[in-house]
Length: 382
View 1 (cartoon, one colour):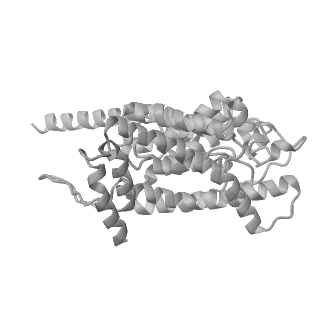
View 2: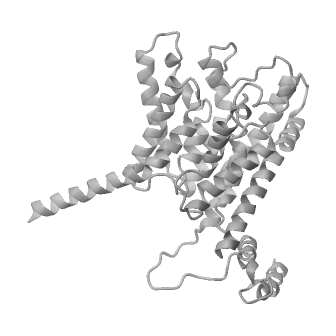
C-alpha cells in the first residue's frame, strides 16, 4: 500500500494546477480518492465529525446489492438452461450469468463514468463517487437481452439529463437508474417488453414464452408461479429483481448501517397492502384485482424498488414524517398502476419517479405544518 501512496505523491505535482497536466486535475483527484482516503480535513469552527463520507456510503450500498447480483447471475443461467433444455450444473449456470451480465456492467460504467469524468474536467470540479451505485443498479434492473447500444444510450441520458444538468451528485431530482429504465421503456419498448427479453438467448427460440409472473397473472396465462417461488426468485425477470430473499438480505445491510431509511421500506409495503387489500375486497373473483395483495410484494420490481430505489437519500423525502407519507404513496401508486394501467403492469418505476417529483412538496407541507403548530403553541403560551 505504501508504494501506491508514494507513486501518487510523485505524480501529484504533474497533475496539480500549474503542472504540465494540470488540466487533468479532476481526473487525477478522482483516482487518488479511489485509491486512498484523502489527507485533507474539514477546516472551520462548527462541523460534525464523522468517518462516513460519500465513498463509504456508496460502497455499503454496493455490498448490499451483492446478494441480488449473485442470485441474478445464477438465475440468468438457470432460466437459459430451462429454456434450451440444458442439463447445466450450479457453477455452469453462474458462469453463464456472469458472462451475460458482465458486458452490461462494463457498458454502464464505461459510458457513465466517461461522461462524469468529462463533465468534471469541463467544470473543473471533483469527480464524485455517486455513480458507483448508479452504474451497478442500471444493469440489475434491465432485461438480460437488452442490446448494449440501447443500454449505452440509456446510461448517457440518465447521467446527462438526470444528474449533470442539475449539478451532479446530490443535486438530482429523480433516481438516475430509474430514469435509464424509463428511457428504454419509452424510447425502445420492444427491448424491455415481451416474453423473450427476460431470458438470455430466448429470442432465438421459436414460440418461446418466458413471461414474468406479473404478465402471467395479469394476462391470465397458465403456469403462474406461487408465492414461495416468487419469494425465492427462480423466475424470469430483470437481473436483480427476482429474488425477494436476496433483496431482504440487502435491506438488512442498509438498515443496520443506517444508509437507507427503514421507514420508507415499511411504508411502501403498507401502502401496497392497503390498496391491494381494498382491491381484493371489492373485486370479482376472476379478475386481476382479486389477486392476493401479499403476492404483489414479491412480484415484479416492487421489493427491489422499495429497498434500493425508493430509499435513495437524494431523491426521496428528507423529513421523518415525510418519509412515511412518501413511502406509503409509492406502494399505493404501484398497485394502482398495476390494476388500472394494462399498458404498463409493473408500476413501481413510474410510482417512484412520480414520488421523486413530489418529495420536495411533501417535505414542504410537513415543515409548514410543524411551523404552524409551533406558532400556535407560542401564541397560546403568552
